[in-house]
Each structure stands twice: as C-alpha cells, then as structure tokens.
Amino acid sequence: MQYNTQREQLVMPEYGRGVQMMVDMAVQIEDREERQRCAQTIVKIMSGLLPSTASRDDDEHRLWNHLARIAHYKLDIDYPVNIVPQEEVQAHPAPLPYPMKHIKRRHYGYLVEQVLDYAKTVEDEEQRRLITECIANQMKQDLFIWNRDSMDNELVAQDIERYSGGTLHLDLDNFTFEAVGESPLQQTEGGKKRKKKK
Image 1 (spheres, rainbow, N blue to C red):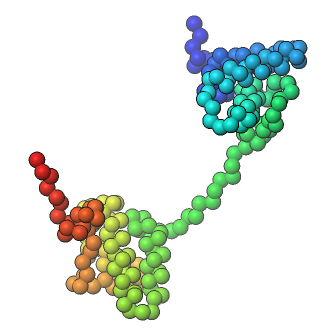
Image 2: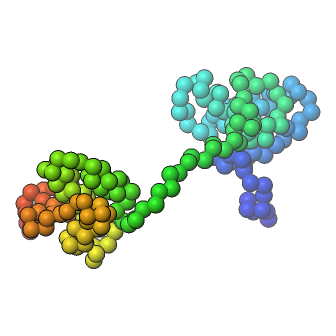
C-alpha cells in the first residue's frame, strides 16, 4: 500500500490527486490533437470541482492557468487564454522595509515618544498641559495592557518628566486619570460596574 505522504507533493491540492494524475498522463501523450482533447476534458472536470467565483471568462482563464501550473508548464497544447509565465507566478515580492526605531520603553511605543517630543515644542502653556494629560492617559492605558501590576500614576508622571528632559510636568494633585480597561458606559458611571439582574 502506498500512502499519499509517500507520493509526490500536489501542486494544487484543491483539485486532488486524481486531477494531478490525469495531467501527468496528458503531458506524456505524444499525439498533439489527442493531448489537446485530453486537456479540455481535464479543464471541464476541474470546473466541476471548484465553485464559480466570477464570470465565465474569468473562470476559464483561471482554470487554464491552473492546468498549466499543475503540469509544471510542460503541457504543450494550444491554450485558449493567455497563460501567466512561470517566472511571474513563482516570483516573490520584494521585502518591505521595516523602520527600525530605538524605543526607550517598548510598552509605551514609538508614537508616545514622538508625541512627547512634539509636546516639548508647544509654546502655549495651556495647550502643552492638555497634550501632556492626553499622553499621560495613553501611557497609563499602555501600562494596563503591558502589565497591570506596574500601572502606577507616579510612574507615569516620572516617565513623562524623564522622557521630556524635565520640560513636561504632570500635576497629579490637579489631574485625574481616565479609567482604563473599562467600557465607555462604565467610565460615565464613575467606574462602577452594573450589577446583573437575576
């Protein structure tokens, strides 16, 4: 007995091993007309295996291209559609450049550091205070997501002063953090959770 794991790997498993074997046989047919008829029959079988996803013309183009792929582009027939070249099908996209940034505290992220740098340049005192408070809320939210045990108001205030070089200050006596880890409904109710009715 021969198991599928011992056989050649399928090019397109969605069509099954039966279609793969038929295509392999069609490649070996010497008579060109018979090979052409065989290929047309295989495409009809393939169309019955997979549901239609687009118009008939698109389906036909897709199926003939799949036939060429299954045959490893060795099936010498007159294709009724343009076949995508093997090099283009197997080409890998160029890797996307990933911006490597040095982040002082990864749990805050690079964007928080960017906003802190921007806040240092704001000249208006009131606007700078509002931006600092918004940043503080975001930093506490980040600490909540990263590690709830390290979520501390004093730590956020110290980090703001440290990252800004002492330019920005968070007045904890006159500032209340927004509730973290709660829904907007719970926040409007003062952080109290509704009791479920039995």
